[in-house]
Length: 386
Image (cartoon, rainbow, N blue to C red):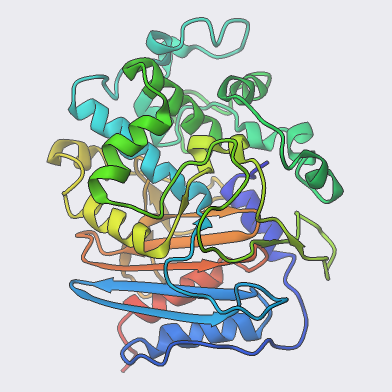
């Protein structure tokens, strides 16, 4: 179970722990002291067991950390640890779709009826009126399966332990969504829905005759040599070095119990939120993507064409493109990238429009407020006050 980004942020912001500080450990490398301060303060406030920041600015790089990967052993956070990236996966999915568009295998203006005939039969939806573009920019009006009350309940508290290894097929996830009425007319307004990206990946498979995972490797992972990035499907492990993923399991208790949620079957998120990656790989991917080294210019322009998100209960001060979003910081600086939350992991990867200057942050817990990431971005990208 994965909540919509806005619901996740609201729930997790209520679950901040009030406790004494953990010892903070961090890099003393010069040049990014303000970012390091955010890391240290986040851990000291018990908003996360550990937090890392990985900065790429041209050919220069910097890595900072605070806190631990494992609260029992005290193992430190390190560069190139793997973690679940949640909805930042959508940038990968959108890139696969746009690569196929560049190859002439599909068009963003194709409708769902062309690729998924029969799937919407008996529902309140008109697949002949919904386009691939509307899936990717979250204006399709298709209900988010992750907001379904029964589905959501399987991921809360003790129920999560009962269902952590459940397998969902993409069609099952879509059928959960289609049991609900549309949230709006296609193309009318932004409404965040994981269902959109499940459908997009299903279309990839129909258009190519290969699995979405195979296309992800062919079009993105292999060309960019993203050695720490994978889509594990039903595999419950995070292979390779990784921090423990600590979760409140959506508890509303003001002092919730914290659980190890590292192992779980993320078929419930698949192409909408099931990718595993590293800070290095995320910086490399987004630097290449925004730098024009992944998509042809025409498809990159499509990706960066945004719709407003105001009134949708989503991340403030943003506009959503195709699998990426633009965010304006309080100082007025605009950044591009994506972010994601899932059990035990929050990640935020943003940077300049040309891809040259990027910051990827990640915490191995899921109860910190969104402001933690905004503070880190402001520390790196906002000019110092005079």
